[in-house]
Image (cartoon, rainbow, N blue to C red; front, side, top):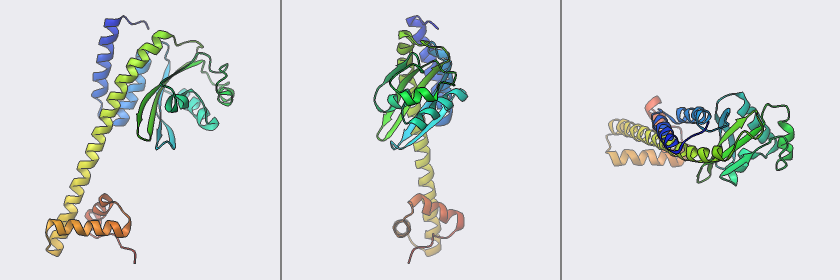
Length: 232
């Protein structure tokens, strides 16, 4: 798909608006991979791979089975273009997946898969969390300079949209935690005839003695009407 500059700008602006309209983080990632296939020249499939805490690696969104199969080959071999995009390079083009000599074991594992070429973009690096947008084609040499140019611009918009979705999730979780703690304090205040500061102190002490987070203490109290049992 060829893009003139004005058309590309308008198209990416519309994509950005569409991604921002998604309701949650998973919905945003699903929209990203499907929009990538319709936007980046050569892309037949797309997926997002993440590493949380630089330990937990998983595929979190795909347009089909192929990205999952290729990603599994990377997990099993511990190497591949998506992992390289996550850890080392912002853009990793792979014109011929099977013939590529950079990841020998990975290339051997995907011989029987219908993947000819790949193109991976580092999507985000947030502390210990990493993300990559990965594109797949059954044809070799499916991605050219235009694919890399459009893909880089697309990945930038996608990263912003995903960060916004993550912020909304974190804000929602913070509000829910605040409300739970408020309800728990109210229960303790009424039960023991104490003020808000004293009730909060009870929650803090219980958290320290049980090694549970304040949210978990509050959720347990509001659900069972009891504080968790303390050791000793």
